[in-house]
Amino acid sequence: MAEPSGALRFARFAFRPNALGYCGGESPGELFEHVVEGVDDPDLRRLCGEFAGARPYLELLAEAPEARGPLDGRVVEAYWVGGELLDRIGPRAFGDDLERRFRRRMPARDWRWLEAKPEAGAVPHHAFHVLEIYPRVGLMGDGSRDALLRTMERCLVRPARVVAVDGDALVAMARPLEIVDGRLRLGDERPERILARIGGRGFVDGVQPGDWVAVHWDWACDRLVPRRRAALERAIAAAVERAAPTT
Image 1 (cartoon, helix red, strand yellow):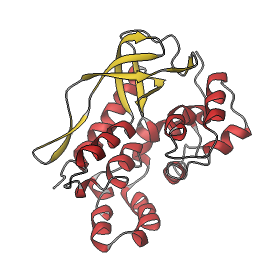
Image 2 (cartoon, helix red, strand yellow):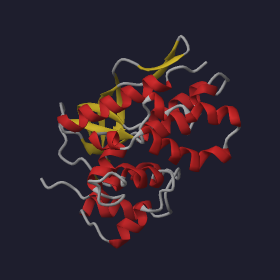
Image 3 (cartoon, one colour):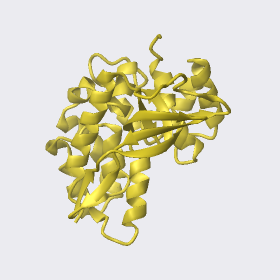
Image 4 (spheres, one colour):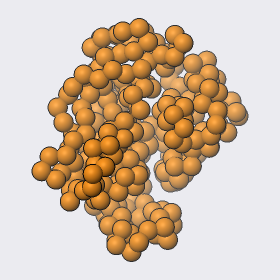
């Protein structure tokens, strides 16, 4: 099976939060149709450009010498899954990018916290945005912690091992986010019910027990070959470790 283009791969991961109204433009149905039909055209690239949260990370990764633009397949894979391209962006470049985008929008104390992240090893991966930018993990000490943790878990792109196919859904084993002794961590595998098709169509047709998929907002958005599964596991583990202190 041919590899999807960078734009099509981006749409695979971006569709579900767009359909739920969390990010992107107002045409999730168009994204869905482009993916299931395998059509990469100017309309798809326009739709991909409407994701304001992801775009700065893609543009930063596209500065790597081997990249050919924000929707280069290597750029898209690095952002959503992981890979060597993340290491091409040094801490200074990432820090300058964060300063440009966030310093004026944050209190000084919060900026000092964020400013230190690139030197501590943070990279422009989707997990960084989920665990560090979106929720401000360091302030997860109030009564909304459980709800926020669940939201982060659903937003985080996680690998899941399929154990059963049930109509348009899958039952898969995935690791949840949890807080133990004031530290964020990945818990032990547990079964989760994941939507895989809408109206009989989806992005992982033919998936069988034993296969691995990427899950985003309870949606099976892509198959994971061993290399991509390993890259995603490494990226998530590192991001969780850096975000671990919550008190």
